Image (cartoon, rainbow, N blue to C red):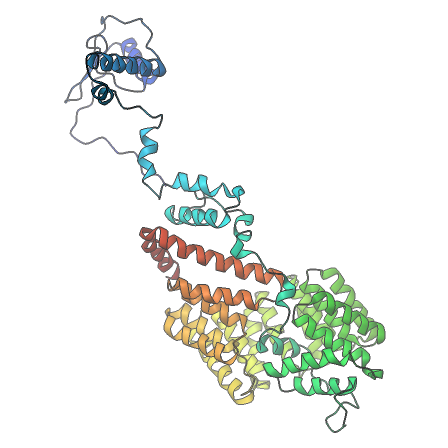
Length: 540
């Protein structure tokens, strides 16, 4: 907000208003037309004394000669100077004459010259930043950022960078998603996806007790299923490789549809959505009764932003088996994402009615109740879960998240600690690191304990180096502390872990913004303290 106009100093007498109204009108009109106080015009016309009195000479002779324009006055002045120079050099030597000539006057305003030495001149920064059509995107983004910091991030004055500016920077151009889709995401991500389906025994004939050659499709399928059961990162990689080889070999017979289902699942996890959709469609073609293939294809269509196709797949799955609890669980996920919480609640409850032993239906029901504003019902659902699934760490982790959302930091941290202990006890080789990350966030929000929050994130990354959530959390923690250079490394790491083009663009945008902040601090060191002060204000 602009500062108020300064009030007149107390004790200074104001000018007396003339008694003649017409005289006062003439004074007001004259001042408004000339916009300035004239001290001498062909004699004394207006005088402002130190006491503030104003005198108006009524009978002062007026000069009716029009005042020359600014251009004419400039020409006249230049002519006078040249005449003086010619007079001074009439009898001088050439060297003396050259020295006597007046310096040329360049057509630059004094205002412009003053601001040439001000790199923080915000109007110049804004104009230069808006010239991103020249293709200098990184430079434009730097000017945008500096302008925003100088202006205190007041959006009414600060410019807004175009999406082309942030995305077309050479450093922010996303790589082809196919280049990213050569490996699986973190074991935490893979494990959470796979456990969203109820565990089923292996098909008859693929048990460990059956000896199968790894040179056959069935043998590779058996090998992949065994690797899956390890629930570790290396195990998931081995399974994905085996499922690829499975369909390159002959002799799958009745397991062919199942093999396409599994290969499509892991191709989806790698971000190869086109190939994954083709595999799942082939699985449905070979075995129309395999409802899991419909569910996975529906989930993939939902991720790709096509909920209509997802609904069609769920309807097709229900027409094959209306008693499959997985169908209702995943259809509830569709409703949840679309914000249809009442419909989601019904489907989660139906999934529970068909199979009460699947913990995630209970957890998601509690989360949905919370989203609907039924806090008491949600808390009651989680208390029942802790009673009936007391050794399941996910219950305590998700309950802790809801407590954290309510600002009950102490209780939330207790639940996260319980989840961490149970993860270590029940899954020592494939620990889920989400409770560690959640505890890190809780300590940061509650006590601004950056040190302990960082340590927890580091532990999570030691256990699961590919965990994108841990990487992103660490980047944000470092950024909040002003450790911009270190934060940049984690944002770039997040880009390496991105599975889809959307995730990649998002990660690179954060990285580019952080890199630009570093450049601002280097080019405008006087802004570093201002930016740090803003960050501390946001934390508080």
